[in-house]
Image (cartoon, rainbow, N blue to C red; front, top):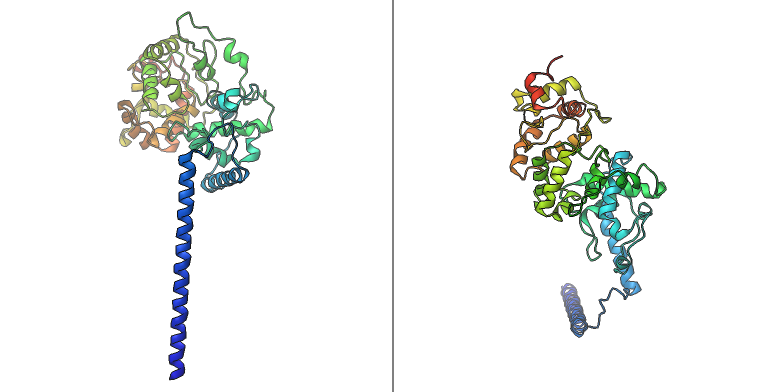
Amino acid sequence: MIVRTGGRRARARDAAVKARSWRVAAIAVAASAGVLAFVGAVVIVAGVYNVAASVEHLYVTDRLIEFTLHRSISVRSASIEAPSLEDDDLVRLGAEHFSSGCAPCHGNPDRPQNPIVARMYPAPPPLQNAVSDWAVEELFWIVKHGIKFTGMPAWPGEGRDDEVWAVVAYLRQLEVSPADDPRHLREREQASGDLPLAALGEPDVESCARCHGGEGSPPISDRVPVLHGQNARYLDRALHEYRDGTRASGIMAPVAAGLAPGEIDYFARYYSSLTSTASGTSKAASGDVQYGREIAERGIPADGIPPCLVCHSGRASAAFPALAGLSATYLNGQLDLWRRGLRDRTTYGAIMAPIARRLAPEQIDAVTTYLSILARSEGSAESVRQGAIGDD
């Protein structure tokens, strides 16, 4: 009995010693934290830390930041699944996105980095070897989300992963192809040689024509809409929507934001005045043409889907775009944006969104295929009224 009591007392003494040890350790940690906080406050208040971009971090600080950066991106990009990035149209479009949005800071294969940008800290790295440093999924995450404290912004087009993947497709080609490979860099002569110069006092259309084409030249990619001969009122509305942020695009929103109302009107009238290059051909068309024709002309009443050409013939209403001759790739992409809730923030967008959601994938393929091979003249309101489209 005495032995058992002694054992309990010994265990009680051990527990008391451990408790005192933990209290001492906690007090020591708290005191250390307090000292560090005090020292940090003194350093901050005294201005000891040099925040100048001309002074590099300490080696330990630099390594810690780099390790944290790579681990954060690696973890957050692990669940991303990359689509096929081999499409030449995607790469060409990404080259123009890169040229307008990325090259001013990172430089281009044919244009060195601006000396002012090079004095940023950290300086934006050249991206010719980006794929060696990052997986394509990591590059996607970086372009989409940006990186804090580096000057790298998040992609301004909310939800526009299609635009981000185009940039990644181009970055991927930068390393495996020479800088002048026509698959991913548009000929500079094509971008500027055949474009009409703006008259004195008029806006320069070259920035638009680089992607959308100019007089006599088509868009750079099937993923870009043909604006030639489009309704001026619709083009004006679209540019205002991009400028106001009600239509998402990381490429078009910054462009539109820099336009004055008079410039928006000028560009809308300029493209509306051009002869349409929507010739009624599309290399991306793959759906059932006859089924698509039926949807475009008669709709699917049982599913609440109206005929496309009632509104989108080009002349039914100047506020709606003409769809005849636009590429199936572009039309599919826009319908996908509506289905994902990215184009329903305006009155007109709210009209189209429920229709897009009712369309099954095979119906979308069919109707976009038919519209892509339909010449603009055949898709006019007059031809619809006369039955020219519906006659065999």
